Length: 136
Length: 275
Image 1 (cartoon, one colour):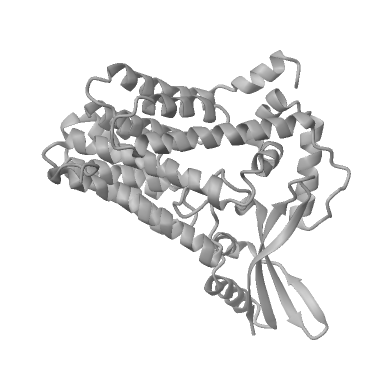
Image 2 (tube, chains in turn purple, blue):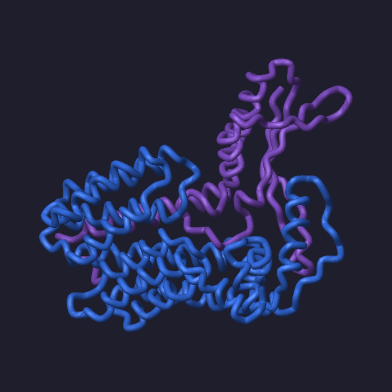
């Protein structure tokens, strides 16, 4: 095949091949679990407003009297950011479990990740839920 | 190839990973290889560099930026090229395809996957909300500092949940025009680079497009590590006879550093009385 390098230089295709495989995996991660387009090696930075700065993690306690927002302590900030960038159900539950380990009195929790969309007309923002998980 | 390897080592020294325990070992290896040129051509040294650029991707998951991945791929490409009978030719192929692949996926995201790029929304919001683009918004979009402050305050309130969105925000007309111009020109430039670098035959426009990208985009988007890598890969894929082009890549690389180091846009704003 003319487009391939000569036989002795085929290993020159390894690094670009890895780039293509990882970038495709990143797109699959975005489609499957809402992986941030800006992260994961897919070269989606500066392509969309769906990035960490415009995503928000929200935790609510589901009590009999209604829902109550739960603050995420500073020591869980890295895990919170991880959840924001990779909002897999398992990561959301991990954050909920970490919160409950610090405050065992907490009841059922719902962990949510939201992104911000801007209206093309007047740029008015609105929140769109990316993922959520309930921890009983 | 010698020049490309030395420049890559310099780039790795200047733009190493964030954490000290990731940065320091890499800088020591690259510094030593710069001082002893024989080491710069040793595949084992580059295997170590590959390891030192790759493990932060795992350690820092998922926070690494895209150019952190590109840095590791480029180090791997050098390692493998040095194990072939024709290292310069092998590196030329790898570097060309790494640039082509980077821009192929950057273009794919922008024109086919992103929901808010083609209609200009991305740049309209980014020019107002990202401080790196504020000077451009003022200089070329006719946006006032009061407008930027008002948008920032409203957005901060909205994102924190402290407030709703004020219905009175008026977008300056010049901003939408600038955003559409940036959207169209970026799409054409990035798609052109992807095509030119993935095309297996020598494309005359290839180097001109990548250097134009370096000279324009990084004037405002001060992601110097990404710019450094792109110019290094551009340099590495040059043919032996392209001496002037190699000089142009190195000059552009230093130009990207100058964009970051010199507050040229703020000086221009002051000179025009727009501050």
